Picture (tube, rainbow, N blue to C red):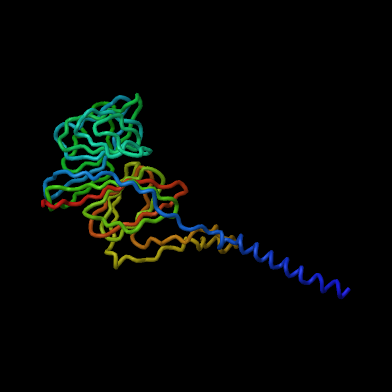
Length: 313
């Protein structure tokens, strides 16, 4: 009997070691995934335009067109950027520059061509006398970003519905501005670096949801359902309140003895944070910076339009 026990002891130890190793491999701590990185980031061609120095009004308007309805720009308006949210647009004007042909387009289509499909980004010169028409016999939805004199929405024809989402006035000390347009996708927990506000930065959420960390400055937020909010952040050195540990679980989970689902070690957002979802927009002004973080299971996709003065020289 003693010889049998001596032979079995090493096998028992080996089995225990294997069990410990297996438990370690499948433990929540080891199963955590790395934080996803932001991307892809697409930068489109910059758009420069003349403006009047001083107070520059900026407005974001959602326009819904019935099938074959058209939005007339007339010949008295400031420069604009148009984002096709749904449907398609047709137009015929050399005053339109196509920055992006659509969400899935690898490169912009030739300037002045049509139709422009969902995800397309158009830049329109000031005082360009043209119309944008819902194409393919289907309704279309647009976000129109206007700089300077706005279109007169009261004169829009039947079949055109316009809703002002957000507006702000920006101080410009030059007679020319540059607009840099980027499209960014953020998976859940992916976090950007700090982006400077420049003179102004405009955000348009195309899909999913994002958290915006405002570190200094102000955000005029327009909700897709029509509500408006103003978010003011203290200077960066006054703002830090550490965010909650995303891995800690809720108090009720801990009290009930439930193990929280493991999440990656997410960088905390420590400024003034607002949530934006599909259809929301924001105009961010003032000295400071922003960080963006994906917060939903569906990747968040957004457009960023930064505005900066161009030196006369």
